[in-house]
Image 1 (tube, rainbow, N blue to C red):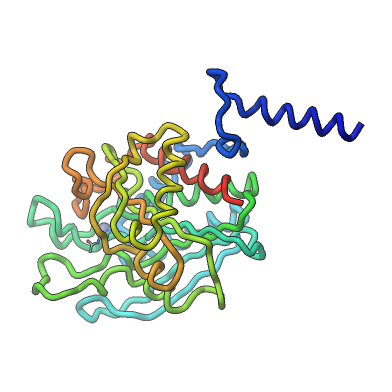
Image 2: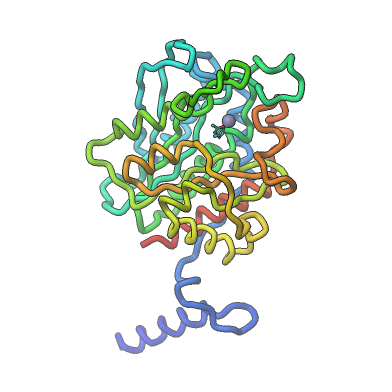
Length: 325
Ligand code: AHN
Ligand code: ZN
C-alpha cells in the first residue's frame, strides 16, 4: 500500500512537470509551486510611502514613513529590529539614521537577504530645471519601489513559508550623497549609502550571516531594464546567473536582459565588502542604458511607476526565494 501511494505521488510529480506543450521540462524548474506576487499590492505600498511626502533624513515625513514600514512588517508577522545611529551628511549636518529589519523564521540557519533603501534624495540635483536642484524628491522609483516590492514579498512569505529563512532590510540614508552642485571633484563615494555602511559594520544581530543578498533599487519605473551590474558580477556572479535564469524561466527576459551594465556605488557594496555576496538589481533606461530618466529629478513620482515592472521584479524574487533549499 505504502509503495502504491509512493508510486502515485511520484507519477503526479512527473505529470506536474510536463508543460503545456507536452515537453518534459527539467524537474528542478517546476519543483516548487511559487505563489503569485501581487503587483497591485506592491503599487499601493509605493503610493503609501509617497503620500508622506519626500522621506528625507531629519524630516517628519521620514519619521512617519519609517513607522509605517515597521508597522507593515509587524502586521505581516515579521520579527522587526530597528537600528538607529548618529552620523553626519557630507556637509557635517548631523542625522539619526534608522535601518528597519524584518526577519522571518529567524532560527533557520540558511538565510536570504533582500534589501532596498527607504529614504528619498533631499535634492533633485539632476533635474533639467536648475531651480529644482535643492528641492527634495518623492523617490517613488528611487527608494519606494524597492520597499514596495519587499513589503509584498513579506506579505507573501507570511502566507506561505519558503524553505529558507528570509531577512528584509530597509536601509536609511542611501541617497544623501554629495549633490552635484556641491561637488569639488574629489572622491565622495563614502557620503552615499550611510545606512548600509552602518549595518555592514554593526550587524543587527551578532554573527548574522546570509547565504546571499539581493538589493532592489529603482525596480518600479516605466521603460525599465535590468543589466548585470559590475560589482555584482565581481562579487556574486553565480547569484546574478541564478536571478537572471529565474527571470528567463518565467518569461521576463525582456526586463532582465542578458547584458552587462556599469559599476554602481550602491548599498550592495558595503554588504559585499562585509562578506555577504550581494547583487544589485538596478534599472537602466531601455533606450539609452543610463539610469532611468526620472533619476534624481522632480519627475520621480508615483505617475511614473509601472505595475508591470513591479510584477516582473517581484515575481522573479519569488521564483528565486521559493526555489532556494
Ligand atoms: C551614485 O550615484 C554615486 N550612486 C547611485 C546609487 C543610487 C543613488 N541609487 C539610487 N540613488
Ligand atoms: Zn538616488
